[in-house]
Image (cartoon, rainbow, N blue to C red; front, side, top):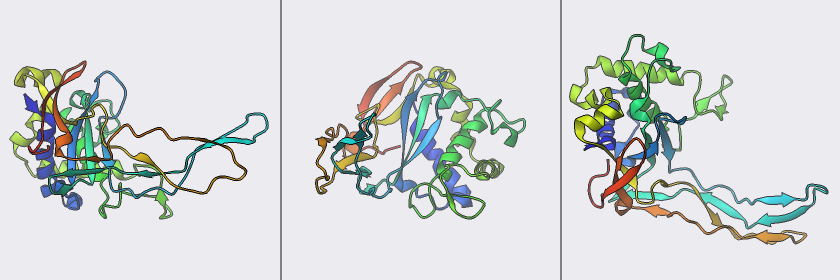
Length: 270
């Protein structure tokens, strides 16, 4: 089988090496993994997940009476934290997930980025998605790349007016550098063709698939509210707070589902 996330990770190494605007990306602090996403369903092709976000300020949930507006109950106080992911001695700061088979079957035509690549084949859209997610990594490793408003302030949007143009510029420059066809060739095939050509598509996943490392709530001690109201206990955490290479699997992806093939353990994490 083709290990799709491993191929993407190898391609990312070449993209970062040839693209000055991505020189801030430390691939030793990045982990690529697969998530299941049907080709016919709506949803993202890929997502950049940041593990360097600081703990949130203490907070709580509360409920009010619909008629009187009176506070009737509240949750325990909590802070929101990021899990830790360490592969051997490497502390992972960013995860990039790819939805399979959806990512493999995306079409450049009729997409909003098509006008950046007139006459280009569909697989260039996949390369655009890869560069797009790498470009989300903040140069100062303080989270996701900040988008500036016209007045210079930080925007709450994930993509600014120049984001897509910058990505297309990097993709065009990378292709102009004549990368090794062996590195980009796998992008030319859709999911069905990959399955036929390689006998199946596999990807790195986490042991708690379909979940993966995500922010979680931790109980935080605060004084009791005044006046006293009913306190709702927080639900116990159901996902790990830390992950290592022993939490990585390789799964076989099909059009309809996935199945676990093997635990990656000490093997290289793609």
